[in-house]
Image (cartoon, rainbow, N blue to C red):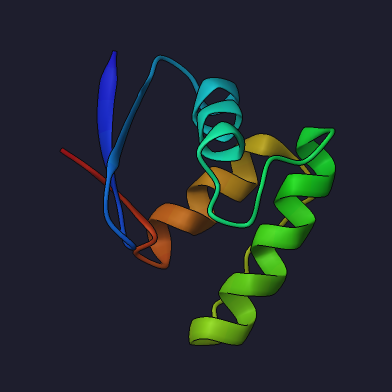
Length: 76
């Protein structure tokens, strides 16, 4: 299991990218979304507005890779 620091504060632990996204959705400041695709799309929009970062939402692995690349998630 890995631990990740969130740019806005806090940490999550997960064993897979799927679990990372599920945990992010559960702890989202924007409120939990009904499905992970909806959560990823809304989060990507927020990332774009906040920092100009482009976060792909075509699949969970790309989404997590982009969050890490943009600095929204860092592995502890």
